Length: 200
Image 1 (spheres, rainbow, N blue to C red):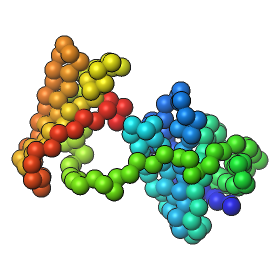
Image 2: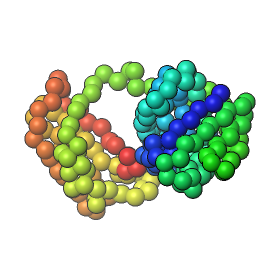
Image 3: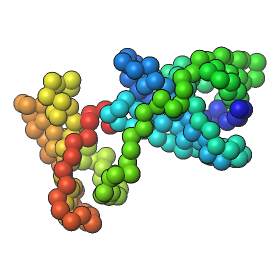
Image 4: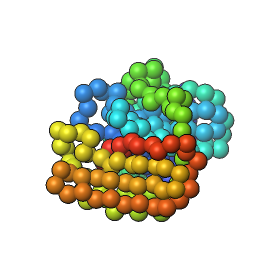
């Protein structure tokens, strides 16, 4: 299978999700990106089993439907060295993939995409929408008090509480406590609470 993507479209997409991938992994597949081609779109996914980041880019050409994995950091490093505006050609063959652009060519060993873990969101019952500026504000206001690598894992994140009239964030490292709130309207039947990990 062959695929061609503009370097200036592919690289930013990879960089937007690569933060989910830890440098040291117990499972080799978690060091990889999942690339899913569906018609003229490519969805790029990264996960550490705790969080999943996903982005979709337009390819401009219908390539059919297929998927494969790529070693995340190696791919990002290779693409950084390609010239700006260049076209990256992907050639997939069994357990190998060739990345090429201009006179540069790289052969990568890849893992089966069927082994890539996917977080199932189909069972989620509730969803909300919040303005980016509000979300950024209430996270930034409490992030300084979050614990780092505490054995009490629930301290390594931010508690969100959502009700009909507001969204509130709370964090603590056991010594300090921070709280922030934004007044807004949500279509929720009852108060919702959840913890989002620090990495998110």
